[in-house]
Image 1: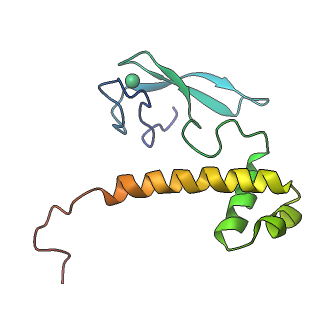
Image 2 (image 1 turned 60 degrees about the vertical axis):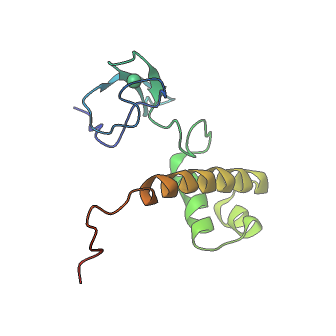
Amino acid sequence: MDDLSRFCCLNPDCPDHGRRDAGNLSVCMRYGTQLQHRLLYCTTCKARFSERKGTPLFGARLPRDKLLAVLAHLADGCGVRQTARLVGVGKNTVSRLGLLAGEHARRLHDELVGFSPLDYQGPAR
Ligand SMILES: [Zn+2]
């Protein structure tokens, strides 16, 4: 059984949109050269989407380890040229992945920081 607790329906018109671990998702297919990616199905709205949709990994042709190495180098402060040289990919690839990852991180930040604290007294002292 696949663990889908981190995923949610990405269809903005779905009543379960954005609700993680709501029990509405299942794996309906696998795809990729080694069937390594899962196609998820929402039982609420009948939408199907890749488990990678909405992430910098969506549609990427690079092998996963190389892709993660690019992002790790960028996160560690390496420049575009340095990252391209160390990982063995093109400069444009590094730039594109950096922009995608940055946009994804911004959206995640906005989602996580948007919560108001439940405790009006503030953090524990
Ligand atoms: Zn849905």
